Image (tube, rainbow, N blue to C red; front, side):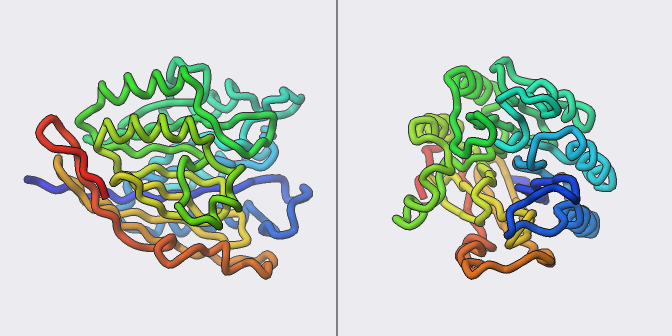
Length: 306
Protein backbone atom coordinates (compact mmCIF):
# COMPACT_ATOMS: atom_id res chain seq x y z
CA UNK A 1 0.00 0.00 0.00
CA UNK A 2 1.67 3.21 -1.23
CA UNK A 3 2.38 5.94 1.29
CA UNK A 4 2.48 9.59 0.23
CA UNK A 5 4.30 12.34 2.11
CA UNK A 6 3.09 15.92 2.23
CA UNK A 7 4.68 18.90 3.90
CA UNK A 8 2.89 22.12 4.75
CA UNK A 9 3.06 25.03 7.18
CA UNK A 10 0.61 26.97 9.33
CA UNK A 11 0.89 30.67 10.15
CA UNK A 12 -1.67 32.42 12.34
CA UNK A 13 -2.55 35.68 14.06
CA UNK A 14 -0.32 38.05 12.13
CA UNK A 15 -2.40 41.14 13.00
CA UNK A 16 -0.81 43.17 10.23
CA UNK A 17 -1.37 46.91 10.67
CA UNK A 18 0.19 50.24 9.65
CA UNK A 19 3.57 50.78 11.29
CA UNK A 20 2.24 53.89 13.04
CA UNK A 21 -0.93 52.23 14.36
CA UNK A 22 -1.66 51.86 18.07
CA UNK A 23 -1.14 48.28 19.27
CA UNK A 24 -1.14 46.25 22.46
CA UNK A 25 2.12 46.61 24.38
CA UNK A 26 2.94 42.89 24.10
CA UNK A 27 2.68 42.83 20.29
CA UNK A 28 5.67 42.99 17.99
CA UNK A 29 6.90 46.49 17.23
CA UNK A 30 6.50 45.57 13.55
CA UNK A 31 4.02 42.85 12.52
CA UNK A 32 5.17 43.56 8.96
CA UNK A 33 8.73 42.57 9.85
CA UNK A 34 7.49 39.36 11.48
CA UNK A 35 5.49 38.40 8.37
CA UNK A 36 8.45 39.14 6.11
CA UNK A 37 10.65 36.97 8.35
CA UNK A 38 8.11 34.14 8.20
CA UNK A 39 7.94 34.30 4.39
CA UNK A 40 11.75 34.31 4.15
CA UNK A 41 11.95 31.24 6.41
CA UNK A 42 9.22 29.34 4.56
CA UNK A 43 10.98 29.96 1.25
CA UNK A 44 13.99 28.08 2.65
CA UNK A 45 12.03 25.01 3.76
CA UNK A 46 12.66 22.18 1.26
CA UNK A 47 9.74 20.44 -0.47
CA UNK A 48 7.03 22.51 1.20
CA UNK A 49 3.77 21.86 -0.66
CA UNK A 50 1.65 24.75 0.63
CA UNK A 51 1.02 27.15 3.52
CA UNK A 52 -2.22 27.84 5.39
CA UNK A 53 -2.99 31.05 7.26
CA UNK A 54 -5.61 30.54 9.96
CA UNK A 55 -7.06 33.98 10.50
CA UNK A 56 -6.42 37.38 12.05
CA UNK A 57 -4.33 38.21 9.01
CA UNK A 58 -4.77 41.90 9.82
CA UNK A 59 -5.74 43.72 12.99
CA UNK A 60 -8.41 46.25 12.00
CA UNK A 61 -9.92 44.83 8.76
CA UNK A 62 -8.56 47.85 6.86
CA UNK A 63 -7.88 47.68 3.09
CA UNK A 64 -4.36 49.13 3.43
CA UNK A 65 -3.22 46.27 5.68
CA UNK A 66 -4.83 43.68 3.43
CA UNK A 67 -2.99 45.13 0.42
CA UNK A 68 0.30 45.07 2.33
CA UNK A 69 -0.36 41.45 3.31
CA UNK A 70 -0.88 40.52 -0.35
CA UNK A 71 2.31 42.33 -1.40
CA UNK A 72 4.39 40.46 1.18
CA UNK A 73 2.81 37.09 0.36
CA UNK A 74 3.63 37.63 -3.32
CA UNK A 75 7.19 36.68 -2.33
CA UNK A 76 6.10 33.23 -1.10
CA UNK A 77 7.30 30.52 -3.49
CA UNK A 78 4.54 27.98 -2.86
CA UNK A 79 0.72 28.06 -2.90
CA UNK A 80 -1.02 29.46 0.14
CA UNK A 81 -4.59 29.47 1.43
CA UNK A 82 -6.34 31.86 3.80
CA UNK A 83 -9.14 31.54 6.34
CA UNK A 84 -11.07 34.21 8.19
CA UNK A 85 -10.37 35.45 11.72
CA UNK A 86 -12.48 37.70 13.91
CA UNK A 87 -10.19 40.68 13.18
CA UNK A 88 -10.46 40.24 9.39
CA UNK A 89 -13.99 41.58 8.84
CA UNK A 90 -15.97 44.35 10.51
CA UNK A 91 -19.54 43.18 11.09
CA UNK A 92 -20.50 46.71 12.19
CA UNK A 93 -20.02 47.80 8.55
CA UNK A 94 -17.85 50.77 9.46
CA UNK A 95 -16.48 52.80 6.57
CA UNK A 96 -13.01 51.76 5.46
CA UNK A 97 -13.25 48.20 6.84
CA UNK A 98 -13.65 44.89 5.01
CA UNK A 99 -16.92 42.97 5.15
CA UNK A 100 -17.24 39.29 4.22
CA UNK A 101 -17.88 39.93 0.53
CA UNK A 102 -14.79 42.12 0.26
CA UNK A 103 -12.71 39.52 2.10
CA UNK A 104 -13.84 36.82 -0.35
CA UNK A 105 -12.98 38.96 -3.38
CA UNK A 106 -9.58 39.77 -1.87
CA UNK A 107 -8.86 36.07 -1.34
CA UNK A 108 -10.00 35.24 -4.87
CA UNK A 109 -7.28 37.54 -6.21
CA UNK A 110 -4.70 35.17 -4.67
CA UNK A 111 -6.05 31.61 -4.93
CA UNK A 112 -9.10 29.81 -6.39
CA UNK A 113 -11.79 30.32 -3.74
CA UNK A 114 -15.33 29.24 -4.60
CA UNK A 115 -17.54 30.12 -1.61
CA UNK A 116 -19.89 27.53 -0.21
CA UNK A 117 -23.63 28.45 -0.35
CA UNK A 118 -23.73 29.21 3.37
CA UNK A 119 -23.63 33.01 3.46
CA UNK A 120 -20.24 32.94 5.19
CA UNK A 121 -16.56 32.63 4.22
CA UNK A 122 -16.55 28.84 3.87
CA UNK A 123 -14.87 26.98 1.03
CA UNK A 124 -13.39 23.67 -0.03
CA UNK A 125 -10.54 22.84 -2.41
CA UNK A 126 -7.99 20.14 -3.10
CA UNK A 127 -4.40 21.41 -2.80
CA UNK A 128 -3.02 17.94 -3.65
CA UNK A 129 -4.50 14.69 -4.93
CA UNK A 130 -6.30 12.88 -2.12
CA UNK A 131 -6.18 15.92 0.21
CA UNK A 132 -9.23 18.06 0.98
CA UNK A 133 -8.77 21.52 2.51
CA UNK A 134 -11.89 23.08 4.05
CA UNK A 135 -12.07 26.51 5.69
CA UNK A 136 -14.93 27.54 7.99
CA UNK A 137 -15.93 31.02 9.09
CA UNK A 138 -16.71 30.91 12.83
CA UNK A 139 -16.49 34.64 13.52
CA UNK A 140 -19.47 35.85 15.49
CA UNK A 141 -19.37 39.64 15.55
CA UNK A 142 -19.65 42.41 16.38
CA UNK A 143 -16.00 43.09 15.58
CA UNK A 144 -13.87 41.70 17.13
CA UNK A 145 -15.94 39.47 19.44
CA UNK A 146 -13.67 36.54 20.37
CA UNK A 147 -16.04 33.59 20.74
CA UNK A 148 -16.81 31.41 17.70
CA UNK A 149 -19.96 29.83 16.32
CA UNK A 150 -21.02 27.63 13.39
CA UNK A 151 -24.51 28.24 12.02
CA UNK A 152 -26.96 25.53 10.87
CA UNK A 153 -26.36 26.39 7.20
CA UNK A 154 -22.64 25.80 7.66
CA UNK A 155 -23.01 22.48 9.47
CA UNK A 156 -25.57 21.29 6.89
CA UNK A 157 -23.25 22.16 3.99
CA UNK A 158 -20.26 20.58 5.70
CA UNK A 159 -22.12 17.33 6.39
CA UNK A 160 -23.25 17.00 2.79
CA UNK A 161 -19.87 18.00 1.38
CA UNK A 162 -17.92 15.52 3.51
CA UNK A 163 -20.07 12.73 2.07
CA UNK A 164 -19.03 13.83 -1.42
CA UNK A 165 -15.30 13.71 -0.55
CA UNK A 166 -15.43 10.66 1.70
CA UNK A 167 -12.21 9.11 0.33
CA UNK A 168 -10.05 12.20 0.82
CA UNK A 169 -7.95 13.07 3.86
CA UNK A 170 -9.19 16.30 5.42
CA UNK A 171 -7.39 19.39 6.73
CA UNK A 172 -9.87 21.78 8.35
CA UNK A 173 -9.14 25.47 9.00
CA UNK A 174 -11.18 27.30 11.63
CA UNK A 175 -9.83 30.33 13.50
CA UNK A 176 -11.60 29.74 16.82
CA UNK A 177 -10.52 26.33 18.20
CA UNK A 178 -13.31 23.79 18.76
CA UNK A 179 -11.35 22.06 21.53
CA UNK A 180 -8.21 23.05 23.43
CA UNK A 181 -7.39 20.56 26.19
CA UNK A 182 -9.21 18.87 29.07
CA UNK A 183 -7.27 20.73 31.77
CA UNK A 184 -9.18 22.87 34.24
CA UNK A 185 -6.81 25.80 33.77
CA UNK A 186 -7.37 25.95 30.01
CA UNK A 187 -11.12 25.58 30.52
CA UNK A 188 -11.09 28.70 32.68
CA UNK A 189 -8.54 30.84 30.83
CA UNK A 190 -9.90 30.20 27.32
CA UNK A 191 -13.61 29.65 28.04
CA UNK A 192 -14.65 32.68 25.96
CA UNK A 193 -12.07 32.20 23.20
CA UNK A 194 -13.16 29.00 21.49
CA UNK A 195 -16.02 27.62 19.49
CA UNK A 196 -19.31 27.46 21.37
CA UNK A 197 -19.79 24.01 22.91
CA UNK A 198 -22.84 22.97 20.92
CA UNK A 199 -21.23 23.91 17.61
CA UNK A 200 -17.97 22.18 18.60
CA UNK A 201 -19.83 18.96 19.43
CA UNK A 202 -21.74 19.05 16.12
CA UNK A 203 -18.54 19.69 14.16
CA UNK A 204 -16.72 16.87 15.94
CA UNK A 205 -19.53 14.43 15.14
CA UNK A 206 -19.29 15.27 11.43
CA UNK A 207 -15.51 14.86 11.44
CA UNK A 208 -15.67 11.56 13.33
CA UNK A 209 -18.19 10.27 10.80
CA UNK A 210 -15.90 11.31 7.92
CA UNK A 211 -13.07 9.45 9.61
CA UNK A 212 -10.13 10.72 7.53
CA UNK A 213 -8.90 13.80 9.37
CA UNK A 214 -5.28 14.92 9.18
CA UNK A 215 -5.82 17.90 11.49
CA UNK A 216 -8.16 20.66 12.59
CA UNK A 217 -6.02 23.81 12.57
CA UNK A 218 -6.91 26.95 14.52
CA UNK A 219 -5.33 30.09 15.95
CA UNK A 220 -6.94 32.83 18.05
CA UNK A 221 -5.55 31.90 21.49
CA UNK A 222 -2.02 33.21 20.87
CA UNK A 223 -0.84 30.07 22.67
CA UNK A 224 0.08 26.75 21.00
CA UNK A 225 -2.16 23.86 22.01
CA UNK A 226 -2.45 20.24 20.85
CA UNK A 227 -5.42 18.04 21.77
CA UNK A 228 -6.50 14.69 20.31
CA UNK A 229 -10.15 13.68 20.66
CA UNK A 230 -11.38 10.33 19.30
CA UNK A 231 -8.33 10.15 17.07
CA UNK A 232 -8.87 13.64 15.59
CA UNK A 233 -5.97 16.09 16.12
CA UNK A 234 -6.98 19.63 17.12
CA UNK A 235 -3.98 21.98 16.90
CA UNK A 236 -4.02 25.64 17.87
CA UNK A 237 -1.12 27.63 16.41
CA UNK A 238 1.26 30.02 18.12
CA UNK A 239 0.85 33.64 16.97
CA UNK A 240 3.18 35.41 14.60
CA UNK A 241 2.53 38.83 16.17
CA UNK A 242 4.03 37.83 19.52
CA UNK A 243 4.97 37.99 22.27
CA UNK A 244 5.91 34.39 21.36
CA UNK A 245 6.38 34.65 17.60
CA UNK A 246 6.35 31.28 15.83
CA UNK A 247 4.90 29.21 13.01
CA UNK A 248 4.26 25.49 12.60
CA UNK A 249 5.65 22.98 10.10
CA UNK A 250 3.92 19.68 9.37
CA UNK A 251 5.07 16.46 7.73
CA UNK A 252 2.39 13.86 7.05
CA UNK A 253 2.78 10.30 5.76
CA UNK A 254 -0.54 8.96 4.46
CA UNK A 255 -1.95 5.89 2.80
CA UNK A 256 -5.64 4.98 2.36
CA UNK A 257 -5.87 3.40 5.83
CA UNK A 258 -3.54 5.23 8.18
CA UNK A 259 -0.92 7.91 8.58
CA UNK A 260 1.42 9.83 10.84
CA UNK A 261 1.19 13.57 11.53
CA UNK A 262 4.48 15.13 12.66
CA UNK A 263 4.64 18.75 13.74
CA UNK A 264 7.11 21.21 15.17
CA UNK A 265 7.22 24.94 15.61
CA UNK A 266 9.77 27.43 14.34
CA UNK A 267 10.48 30.16 16.88
CA UNK A 268 11.20 33.48 15.16
CA UNK A 269 13.11 36.40 16.69
CA UNK A 270 10.98 38.50 19.05
CA UNK A 271 11.99 42.16 18.89
CA UNK A 272 9.12 43.25 21.15
CA UNK A 273 8.79 43.08 24.96
CA UNK A 274 8.75 39.77 26.84
CA UNK A 275 6.02 39.68 29.52
CA UNK A 276 6.32 37.81 32.81
CA UNK A 277 3.85 35.21 31.52
CA UNK A 278 6.01 34.47 28.46
CA UNK A 279 6.58 30.85 29.56
CA UNK A 280 2.83 30.16 29.67
CA UNK A 281 2.49 31.39 26.09
CA UNK A 282 4.98 28.79 24.87
CA UNK A 283 2.67 25.95 25.88
CA UNK A 284 3.84 22.50 26.87
CA UNK A 285 6.55 20.56 25.07
CA UNK A 286 3.84 18.48 23.34
CA UNK A 287 2.24 21.71 22.10
CA UNK A 288 5.44 22.63 20.27
CA UNK A 289 6.50 19.35 18.64
CA UNK A 290 5.42 15.74 18.44
CA UNK A 291 3.65 13.18 16.28
CA UNK A 292 0.12 11.82 16.18
CA UNK A 293 -1.01 8.52 14.58
CA UNK A 294 -3.90 8.79 12.13
CA UNK A 295 -6.42 6.09 11.27
CA UNK A 296 -8.94 6.15 8.42
CA UNK A 297 -12.50 4.99 8.76
CA UNK A 298 -14.16 3.27 5.81
CA UNK A 299 -16.97 0.83 5.27
CA UNK A 300 -14.50 -1.90 6.19
CA UNK A 301 -12.77 -0.22 9.09
CA UNK A 302 -14.20 0.85 12.46
CA UNK A 303 -13.55 4.31 13.86
CA UNK A 304 -10.28 4.24 15.80
CA UNK A 305 -10.62 5.87 19.18
CA UNK A 306 -7.40 7.24 20.61
